[in-house]
Image: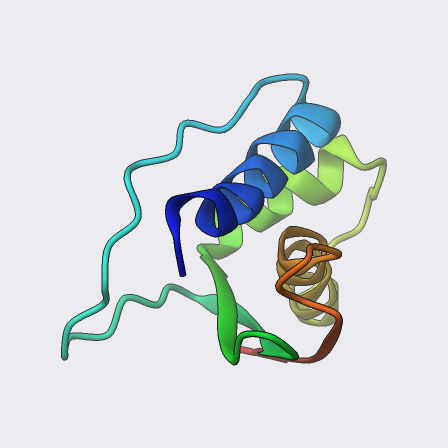
Length: 109
C-alpha cells in the first residue's frame, strides 16, 4: 500500500474518535507488525478484498471500550457489548475506501 491508501485508514480512525468522543485520536505512524502479538482484551478484524487484500485490526482494552460505550449512551455494559463495539469500530475504520470494496468481519476477545 502507498501512503495515500494508508492515510484513508488513519483518517477513518481520527474521524471515528472525533465523532464519538469529541476529541481526535492521536495516531502513531503505521508500522509492519513483527512476530510479537499486539492485541489487547478485544480485537476486531475486517478482511479486505478487491484491489488489495489483507486485514484491518482494531484492538482495545475493556476499559477503553466501556468508556466509548458510555459516551455512546449505553448505561449497562457487558462482554457482548465490548465484542460488538470492537467489530463496529474496525468496520468503520476499514471502509468504505477505494482499497476496500468488499470486506468481512470478526470480533474476538
